[in-house]
Each structure stands twice: as C-alpha cells, then as structure tokens.
Length: 165
Image (tube, rainbow, N blue to C red):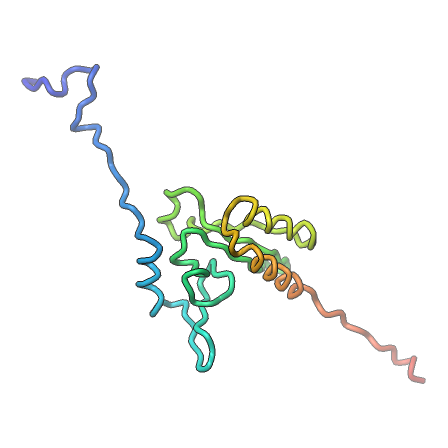
C-alpha cells in the first residue's frame, strides 16, 4: 500500500479507467477496390455486364454505386418466402455502428406493404424522406413494382367439357 497513485477514492485510477477504442471500419472505397475483381457474389457471362448476387445490391450490377458489401448505405428490395407466405422486404444497413461489424446484424430487413399505393409511400419514406440513398429512390420504386408483379399468380382457366357439345 505504499503507492499513493490509486489510494484515494475521489480520483479515478488512470490504470483502471483506460479508454478502449474500437478499430475504425475501412473506407468504402478501399473495400470496393479489394472486392471489385474477385468475390464470391460475382457472376460473369460472355457478352454481358458483370452481375452481382450480394445482399443489398438493388440492381444486381457489380458496381460501387449498387454494392451491398462496400457501401455504407445499402438499399435493396427483394422477396422473402416463408413457407407459403411471400413478403416484400426492404433491406438497409443498421444505423448503429456497433452492429456494422457483425455480419448477421449489419443488414436490417423491413417488410413493405403489398398495396401499391402504401408500398410506394413506404419506399419513398425510406429513401427520400429519411435522406437515405435518394439517388436510388426511382430505381427502388421501379424494382418494387417489378417484385410486386412477380408475386401475382397466373389464374388457371378451367374449360368446361360440356360447353363444346
């Protein structure tokens, strides 16, 4: 007990209360330069643009603008199927910085209404209203319309056997 450094209770001990700083995430440009040539999501075909199957990629093109891996702000609209039920999902990046480092918690999926009017309002609020990727708002609305039409089932017309006689 000869040390006067940590004996007083009024002053916190500098040895105990060290600030632990988290390492900063790499810049988006640096991540894109590392990922753009080779990653597991790239799909290449002859005479076609390079496509990407990464989560959070709105258009499926392998470019920095649409990238779900490199971009700080991710936007995607897709269909999620659970058994018989199909839902339209808007994917964005988690706003909490602590969850950005965890792959499972990095992306947030929000359900979107299937009613055309309400769904387009939700997409507009999530992109333009919240100042989150306003540059992709028009593309997001077009993709919402395409996803919505893809959910429509073709009606089976049953022909009566007696009608021909």
